Length: 111
Image 1: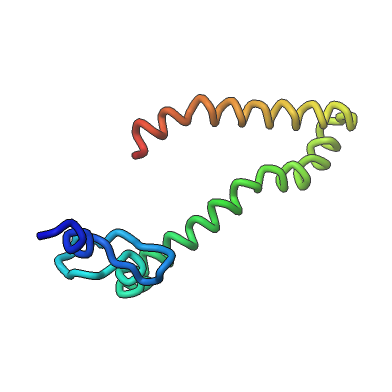
Image 2: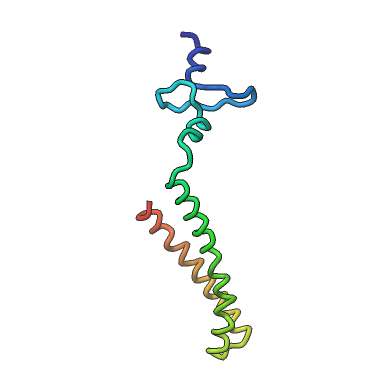
């Protein structure tokens, strides 16, 4: 078996400018794009996409909560505008530090 025929078994060239590695599925000539197209979009894919979207929305929710809750806290606690700004800044810094400190726990136990 020469080297060219061995490479043809492992690679398929759909268009002249690119080639992609063949998946080891027992079917010769199927590339990644064909496998994904054949698999389709199932319930798990839709659930993962919607979940990721909702998680991204939640990441910005604390900024929105500052805008909503800030004036209420300012009135209830009789704070000046500067004091409210300091409170919101300290809260943001604390959330950042907590994320950095708890990330290793998520890596260790969450994966």
